[in-house]
Image (cartoon, rainbow, N blue to C red; front, side, top):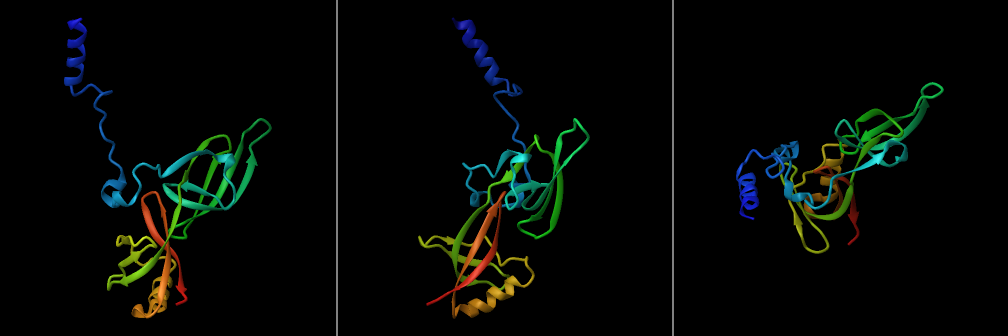
Length: 186
């Protein structure tokens, strides 16, 4: 009847009602990174049991996307749980990070996507203009700051546009960075 209807109306109009009006949780990516470049529909990380992660795979450590260099498993005592000790390297900075997680515990794995682009232009401030095979342009990545010499190597290979150079852009957790390049034979 009408009494039920008015209950719903009052619940919806009462803005402090938490189920209907969740407060948006501010994340770092809102102001630091360009959201449009990440696919909003795809999650940037997936949950995984620590014991399922393999050497050469990816793991999030201290909020950084890392590639696993080695895993050592240690048992703590007779009835203790196995702990996985991960030695990994930040895929964007090359910095080594370590983490210890009980093997049955859940941890997070970054979704890492790589794409190939051709350099159309390199700006004075290292900003790149890239184009893919479909003719789409990308202007939101710069020459990489890591490894130290790669930016200059890419400039030299491209030689003010004399040569065709393609780059591999690696994307994870809202960050995109050039990780490799190669000269394209004419």
